[in-house]
Image 1 (tube, rainbow, N blue to C red):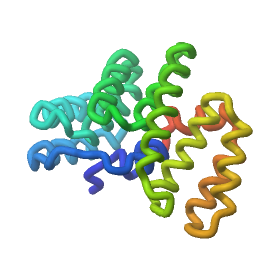
Image 2: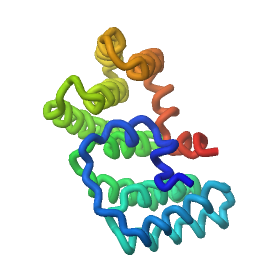
Image 3: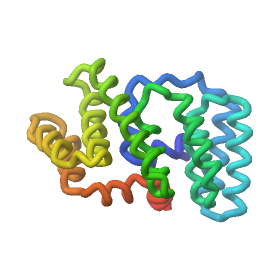
Image 4: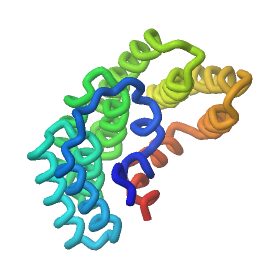
Length: 210
């Protein structure tokens, strides 16, 4: 059983580009509730998803800083079409990791796909600033830096700076080192902003779990 559902299927943003994030010491009871909720929700039955959301709420009552449980709850709130609850959960996730660009970028995608392009752009700009700040404190030789640099390039595409993004991805692709990083850079280089918007939507995260 996968304890952290979001780590097994989450988009590149939240799974790979959040180096150094601090989390509370796991509460065993909260972890058990999250595990049970994952098993229920992965059946994609609406009644069982409702029950899973109830379990995640109990887990969060025990441990408000349990990031994975809050993320899982948000993903399935979105799946049920609860836009206001989804947005509220995204705001709570951002409050847990205010220095990270990941949730800012995810919130921006959510806002744009739900018709608020102006606020979405503001969030993409916030994400850009957060990624820059993180890159400035990481050693370029680390895997965290390389992951974050790719995520930064993807966010440039969301800001409409496609040529800048592709130039950076080309530079990453041509560096010696990890083959997975090169493949990822090439994959994102070939995709348009619209492609990436679909790929990183919350709906697509659900599709990856099926």
